Image 1 (tube, rainbow, N blue to C red):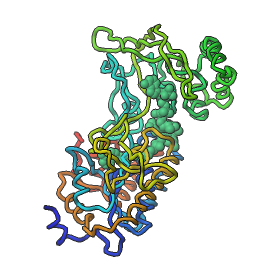
Image 2 (image 1 turned 120 degrees about the horizontal axis):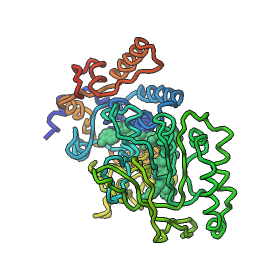
Image 3 (image 1 turned 90 degrees about the horizontal axis):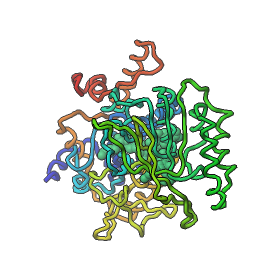
Image 4 (image 1 turned 135 degrees about the horizontal axis):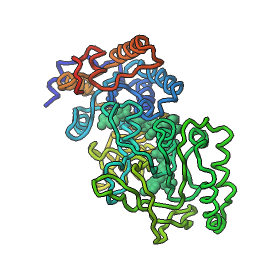
Length: 462
Ligand SMILES: Cc1cc2nc3c(=O)[nH]c(=O)nc-3n(C[C@H](O)[C@H](O)[C@H](O)COP(=O)(O)OP(=O)(O)OC[C@H]3O[C@@H](n4cnc5c(N)ncnc54)[C@H](O)[C@@H]3O)c2cc1C
Ligand SMILES: NC(=O)c1ccc[n+]([C@@H]2O[C@H](COP(=O)([O-])OP(=O)(O)OC[C@H]3O[C@@H](n4cnc5c(N)ncnc54)[C@H](OP(=O)(O)O)[C@@H]3O)[C@@H](O)[C@H]2O)c1
């Protein structure tokens, strides 16, 4: 039905290009993929839910890493100026959203690359997970990084916090609790042992000065016999924490920082009024299975009193995007036709056991919570290479899909943000910083950003 429009409306499509590709999601993976594909001669329509590009590089990276963030922003700006690449921010794809995935398929794009990241935190599905005081990492991250619409939200964070998980997100969350909120205590809970932690040393150095070393020594001593029985070196376990002390950031709060190993939450305890009073944990032991130390419950439980729990246990993909999901991730073709470095980038329907032709996955949309920006970049580029192999093996559809898209976007109920608008937004934020005498200024709502770009009247409710 939309094909009629395509014949008479031809603005965005470049006749000189080899075909049309839609890239959905402009985080690091999508941005680098879009450049790779457009440089190979294809027109790329890059659709992004957020107004700004960058994804978690913009709204995940801890606010004090300003130099890193500014460097990445500069790089992303350059990527967006690649010829044959059209950026459309403030456009969400998915079931019941601005556009549905099947509409893009029907519009005849030669290929579609999905690089929308893994937007939601994993949940545990335990009793009490909905109590006031139980948060998932993104609740805090999006608040302290200023992501609309979460910026400025008042979270009820108390004085004694427990963080579940021992990856780098845990270090960011603990950094916020210890150095910004200056809570009385932070207790980090690992379901396995010291040698199975996933954080990086330089990240832990930000919070190491607050470690209660007497308590840490007790914990390490307790786990020693088990580590030895598994052939692990307890000295190496101790070194993970003690090696962070010489370069630790100076202590700026009195927060007591504890670690608990070999424990998995079993329920969150209600104080009787719907608020969190504590977390019950199962004590674990470790068993080596398939060469890896796995946590196994011993049957003994214990309780940590706490008014706040933050689950920092990794992310999962958007189940309402329009693609089949298997165990927190979009299903991938187990026998890829266009592998790159032996990795499958092809979307797949596990019910029919068939690949979804022309639909590819990259970055955290391919593998949730997988690594740093550099890894997402590499995965984006490799996903683009898979797309290019596919395009070389399939005739172009010549359907002028980007013209269809332009028209469709013109009829959305809200403004769409383009490359030239982003330049205005950057200028307005810089002007505001000068006016306020601050190092930085970031608008914290979509309404403010759209108004600053002259795309809408400012609506204080947005
Ligand atoms: C809390 C946190 C802190 C981190 N800190 C660091 C750090 O300090 N250093 C580092 O190197 N790495 C860091 N990382 C890792 C890094 O952010 C990721 O590796 C990287 O951002 C993943 O890139 P991506 O493009 O796959 O996904 P994302 O960055 O998540 O980008 C996804 C993009 O897709 C868009 N999108 C989502 N849904 C839709 C939709 N339905 N329709 C259209 N568009 C959509 C989003 O708007 C977003 O722009 C951090 C990660 C987290 C969670
Ligand atoms: N500053 C930075 O550079 C920075 C900041 C944030 C994130 N990142 C990157 O982003 C990626 C994601 O980080 P992340 O911390 O979310 O993930 P992660 O590194 O995978 O760590 C997740 C942690 O949660 C634990 N966990 C998972 N499921 C659990 C469960 N059901 N019960 C109890 N514990 C559970 C894991 O334990 P097991 O090991 O036992 O599974 C692990 O300790 C990583 O690559 C990270 O390096 C980087």
